[in-house]
Image (cartoon, rainbow, N blue to C red; front, top):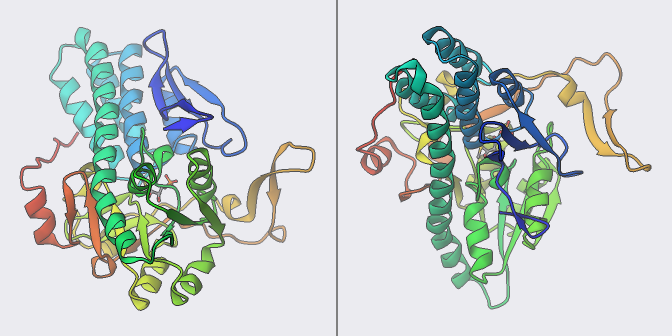
Length: 368
Ligand code: MRU
């Protein structure tokens, strides 16, 4: 997608053919800065410290991390070491494991003198594939928005609520939940997006930045506003992303998603979840019981990033000093609250049967 009219991906290879470049998401939306990743260790730091974030993008950067690692040392021991370091960076988004398992099993089968080359090819393949999957999600999701638009009085926008950032910044390009919105906007449909701020990390600001860059009308709201808006008929549908979806359709996503799903259910607002198939964890059934929920530093709760009156990016404390802060990064929305899953192959209900039918051919990557 575009920043200042220029097409941009979130991760790409530099001209030297081995350095990996990313957008520093800790600086967005205030400034657009590129970071160069030159080692596997730096790629791991980028994921752990959320210089990059969003499940599909985490997977792609991990694959590039393996490539950087193979450039450093293509031995069996280092292959395992790279896998172990990268897999430990973030616990909830399953695309990380999916990308690492896929890369690891491919590299393991190669002689060590081929591993660097194959690792870079795999990383590029995973990144390109993510772009295709996300664009297809957009095309399928567009049909839902079209249908709602057709049912509304002429000239009235389709109001869509989203939580966190599941736009192109959370993937390699296009996004998951926001991809159908981009497609609808491109198709000339009048859409307006309610953007949840998404404390504590404020990923909603990334969504607002993206939508603003593309001219999609939107309004940033406090996380607590969604229920009120739904009660007053101001939300036609919700679309969110997911970091891990279970075999029976439970959806793990950014903290606060569950509360939005409950409000949507109570107000009969359709609640859709958009995901590429690598976000499905076929080994997990009951999301509430089985998905590990990342807990991050309390400082992300007590502090916020912002621009001070002098235009300087500042990390500001908002809590009484010494306050104990909890920072649960994700929650699980049980499948019964999900109207449908928007995937690259089409829309299906959030049930074990529908998922198994849609993805009957999917083989699980070999575990490392
Ligand atoms: O902690 P993050 O910013 O990596 O989490 C990302 C999310 O939870 C997003 O909501 C997104 O929907 C999942 S990735 C497309």
